[in-house]
Length: 190
Image 1: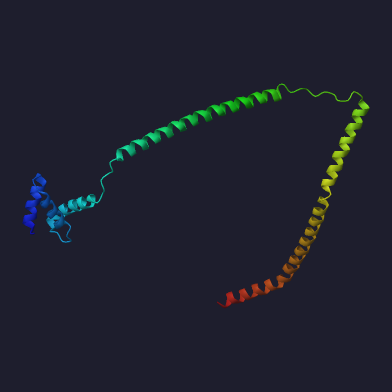
Image 2: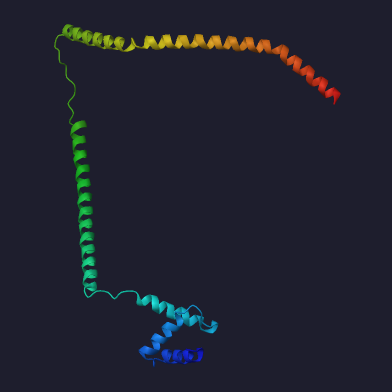
């Protein structure tokens, strides 16, 4: 088929007067690799038609499935809305419960009362409790003795390292003077 026939078929196609055979011929022509340059735009249009013809038609129950999906989304939204309202009210109820408990804990708290009527018994009980606290504190600080020993040993080790470093520094002084002399000689020679 030559380009003049294709142009005539295109005119009929755009005027809406083409037959199915004409359209098939146009599709075949524009599916070829080589198309004249002045017809490249039409090639793109027919390439689109060919690609879109591969898209299947929707099924008969397509609309029903869309509507059912929309209904399910509406139900989910309503459920979320109810949950949000429930969580808000439960949060308010929890806050009120905490405020009430705080009121009864702090405001209605009873004042401490004397538990002993005899001061000597109260003194003896106080001394017993203080002795127990002292004993527990002493047991807890016993393990700190080992830490004190560790600290002392560490300090002795650091003193030894510092002494060694001082001796090395002292022994390096003559080497430094020799290096300085060598540098002076090199600078005067240059």
